[in-house]
Amino acid sequence: MFKKILIANRGEIALRIIQACKELGIQTVAVYSTADRDSLHVTYADEDVCIGPPPSKQSYLNISSIISAAEITGADAVHPGYGFLAENAHFAEVLAECKIGWIGPRPEVIRLMGDKAKARQTAKAAGVPVLPGSQEPLEDASQAALLAREVGYPVILKAAAGGGGRGMRIVHAEEDLAGQLSTAREEAEKAFGDGSVYLEKYLVEPRHIELQVFGDSHGRVVHLGERECSIQRRHQKLIEESPSPALTPELREEMGNAAVRLCEAVGYENAGTIEFLLDSDGRYYFMEMNTRIQVEHPVTEMVTGMDLVKMQIEVAVGRKLEIPNGLKPRGHAIECRVNAENPDTFAPSPGPLKTFHLPGGPGTRVDTHGYEDYVIPPYYDSLVAKLIVHDRTRDYAIARMRRALDFFVVEGIHTSIPLHKRILRDPDFVAGRLSTRFMERFQQREAREGDKDGGK
Ligand code: ADP
Image (cartoon, rainbow, N blue to C red; front, side):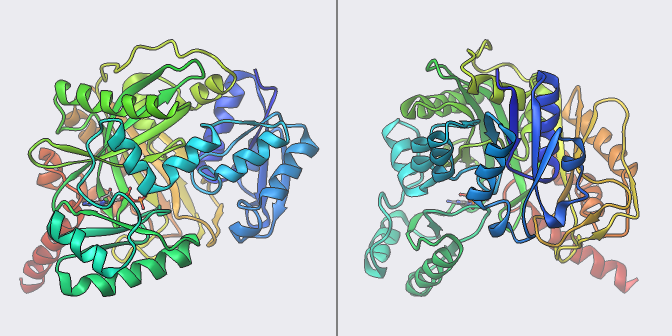
């Protein structure tokens, strides 16, 4: 087993990894930027190293500082968490050259699946359904127009190197295609340093369903069921749940097997997620793979009773996965992402947590790096806490989440808690009528009702 793990991350996920290491008897090293001196991941780690000033490029994305920190402290492996360097194949390669372990898949697999256009080809070759679209990055506007005509509008343009919902453009008609293509290219070039863009059919009202997969170094891959992440704003997830109200056991097995097939085809090791879109006729299509632990992994932990972060560490040292493929989910789990942001405009709301009272009680879990008087820095993403509940059925889980949200008191900054409270009372949410356009419709409904109330 590893003796000492360096956590190349911050926030709640750094703490989550420290918890797993402690339970496995592994020493921990935190790295932090000067903006994160007072962070809990620094407090709880056995050792800590400052790796630079606040901007991520100079700290959490600074490979040479992180490698130096690992060498100085004698860490024998790095856990990257999610975001930052988690899907950076080059970082994984440099670690290998330095004889430092990497808790994640092999670099060549990260690189292959990180190119969304190549990932699509790989999925297709493994017999996993993909949406009609381009096999290679688009060459020019006329080629794009031919292809779009073939698959039919609307189409979506996506950055091959994309992530975090950025660099996507929906095109409804041919006259907009050339303009949108050059905007998408510019955006992709600016955000990812790679202007390659591909095209696929845009589904108008799909569900986002993703499969948790795990591979060991002995060639075995299993899936651990799905998470439904259809509640999104600006293509970013807000609420996730498991199991999905839309899946029958048969469809779960079919999608799970497709996910496993794709992982087997690339020799996948460690935790990963295969994201699918599911249309209203029950047809599913591969969208992308994330080659790391996800923000929303706790809902899978709640319904499977497993600790995915400990499993990541164990398979990284060569342990065999001793679990059956496709475990039956137990009960229902929901996660609400509590972001430091204005719930109406979604503008970031950094600042001091004057009150920070966490809910507890049965089936209630909070993953957070927040504490009273902690000041949320403005430099990083806005996630302050993940509130996760588990209960026997979806209805019970919804009631539990409403209660937990009522008991979660944050003062000093704006958070998404008030928005979550309203979503958890929405008739469509309660009935499980979900799609990636849920939030759009929800906001329209609220605006109409607001107008009515205003007229009274
Ligand atoms: P990112 O990696 O930037 O998060 P994804 O490819 O995972 O991008 O897509 C994010 C979200 O965008 C999806 O969950 C879905 O809501 C929407 N989306 C992506 N592709 C399509 C598509 N072909 N049709 C409809 N919606 C899509």
